[in-house]
Image 1 (tube, rainbow, N blue to C red):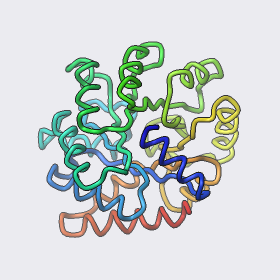
Image 2 (spheres, one colour; image 1 turned 90 degrees about the vertical axis):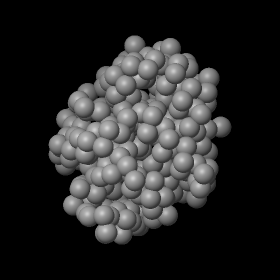
Image 3 (cartoon, rainbow, N blue to C red; image 1 turned 90 degrees about the horizontal axis):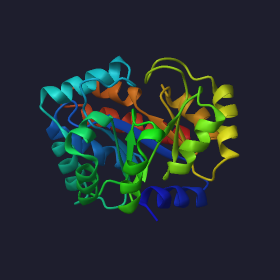
Image 4 (tube, helix red, strand yellow; image 1 turned 120 degrees about the vertical axis):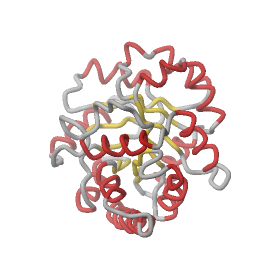
Length: 264
């Protein structure tokens, strides 16, 4: 059983929902990423989604695009991200770490090499935004062999046949994108999300996380009622962007605690 599956199992036993913050590795500075990861866990995160900096993050809105730009300005790449996870594991061997990124860096080093390095760094799950299920059967197989979950995105426009195709390959959980557009783009239509999540639930026992539009604690509370996990990306990165080195940890911890209380 993977860390992700085990975490969802334990939360379900307590009638609780997972809270998953997103940060970009290396933003605002590589030296701060590990402290931020530990602070998020200490403040209520059940898992962490760690973004791999990329020059063309097409699924992300301006906020997370700027986070990638800040990280890339410090020359943060895949090797640094793997090292961060490995170092994180020295003090935390329980919290699932999910890498989120794009196909280009994976293709650049080769899928087998990527999976081997992810395994040796003790990564738990991979979200590759622009790997459609039709084109990543072998990649998903490689991940499965190493007990790394392959997490796919589903959207409001995903048709039934495509949802079924994704479910066949997915593990860990399904990530439902709550709105049409990029991260942080609009307000969530809770009724629409509820309907779509309900449809997905009829097809699978996999947990369903919802993200891409959770702007505050009130939204997180509503999303938690209809999902198994709440993913908070742009709002967390906004907090990072508006903080300085002195108050960064305090500010993200405060936000995390507010979100945790709301989700509970």
